[in-house]
Length: 266
Image (spheres, rainbow, N blue to C red):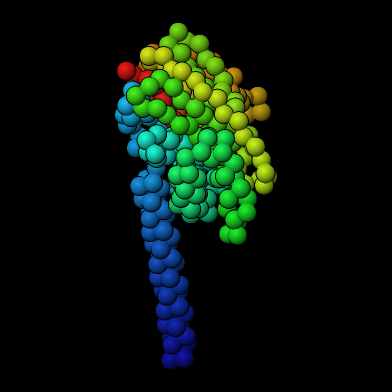
């Protein structure tokens, strides 16, 4: 009987130890996710900011705790750069590359070359990287904060949209392939002029490829159609309105979502 009692006690202790290990493992994972989220928030643009004549709003909605998407705004050599990127993958594995990719982006912008040159340099750096940087789609714009002009380039991302105050929507598609896929890829750029209250909207493919069923897709042309009803609203309102439409169409988010609206307000 004593041997049986001892065996039962050892089994109970073993199960207790397993539960403790599981709790510690869960706590460690939660701490890792929280740390990754804090790093992402520190590196990415605030939800709302003012840069010269422009109001900028952004939002990132992760599919799995933390996102592989990013929105960044930073000043370099007297110009402001605005970027929305989408790293291939989801969750923590994609988010862990965020610091490295943003560092590559900033260093490419330091050189002071044209926007296509920046995109080509960044693409080459990512393609030749020895650490296996994930493929990244990127919208990159150079903004003159006290002017009305903006030069942009799209690398493997959905078209951006220029929403005029007169409720007209233009799709912006100049650019090239996704970054890191082709060594000597070439990129184009275009310059646009924003009138007062005109808004540029950039969205990741998580926004434009939301599916509720086989017959539903929020394609770029449908995004443009939805945007016509938001002309004249603030940049923050436009971002919130489109996110609300996406959530209504697909309550379960299966891909990271990111949006950036840039509106001329002066």
